Image 1 (cartoon, rainbow, N blue to C red):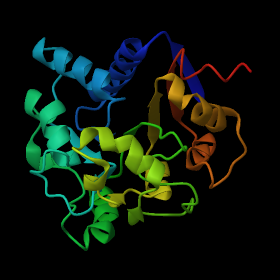
Image 2: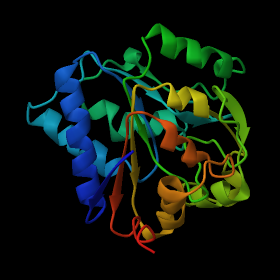
Image 3: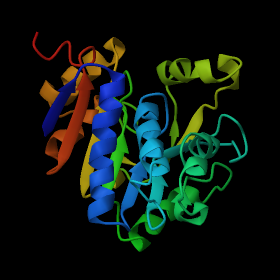
Length: 240
């Protein structure tokens, strides 16, 4: 596991975008795994800027998102499909038919999603965020390290953390479709971004903790090609 420490979330975004851009330049038909939430937004902003400056093309890239709320259509403003369209896809030259986000309305999506990834040749580079309780994707504490894409029940802490995006906590779906931990680990390369003081405990477990399904992120310690980008706040417990 390689750890890169930067000053703030803006520098984290630039560092992550540089890695992603380099991978696309080296392999224009890259299969890229993507994440949602506030953490990757600076990264996406940098990628959009590179594209608009003519430095980067996504025309041959295929993407797979980690997860989606169950029960939300892709047109719902809080769905992850809508998030990706607004915050990345509509601002670059990617073909929308090569962007995959789990279908929150399809009861068979969990079974089909890993097959779609395999048909694309597997994920070359998977981008991850990090939950306060150590979840990656929507794989909450206790998720099997052998899990493939599955339907998950969201914990109260995760629902609470995501409530800020909805009008009220009661509107947050209590289930999601998520790539499983094994699905994530199948990626050839992983890039996790964590920023903010509230992520410091999870980061400490990720980097220094014992391998445990109670902290799902610890599975990344066993990946042969994993890079962690941290800002100063998120890294604050590593030296304690």
